[in-house]
Image 1 (spheres, rainbow, N blue to C red):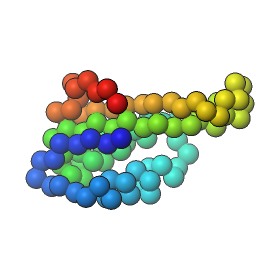
Image 2: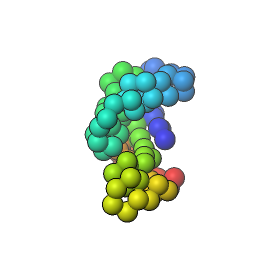
Image 3: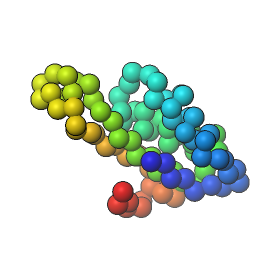
Image 4: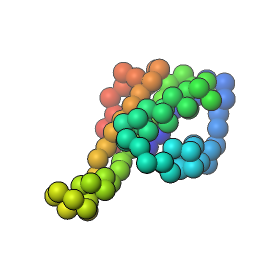
Length: 90
């Protein structure tokens, strides 16, 4: 989930989806860092007043090794600017 408060630039949702899927989600990386990088890119590129990003991921180490639970997901969130101090119930 991505929430942002625009400043002067408003973008279409397709561009945000492309940023997440084509730029960030294709790499092997740590979920917390990916979530932070998505938020920072939105603030940098769109000059947004605030952004809140929440990611939901399946971790292969949980699915294939150890507990072998392929139904579990891990959520991670990151907020910047005016949305930094908001509490979300997603």
